[in-house]
Image (spheres, rainbow, N blue to C red):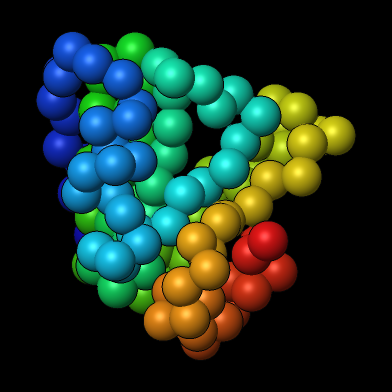
Length: 113
């Protein structure tokens, strides 16, 4: 069963980009058409975790199983395609070989760009 933790943090998405959610910490950016200084998403395929930031609201989703994690990523993809079918949704592997290999191993290579 996945768990969702919610918090509020005044600031911008760059706290995550240049903080904990860097590739060296096992994080990849989930690219969506809504990305802005006040909105962003990151995922750690080793921790099976997704972080979403929107105008200070933070949701941290941690999955217990690989299957739950894959479904969570596919659900995010599906929602984004509904929102903007012309946008090329994807995951930025951050030019990190370990991250890219992990996404490939999970069967999510079609989302990497």
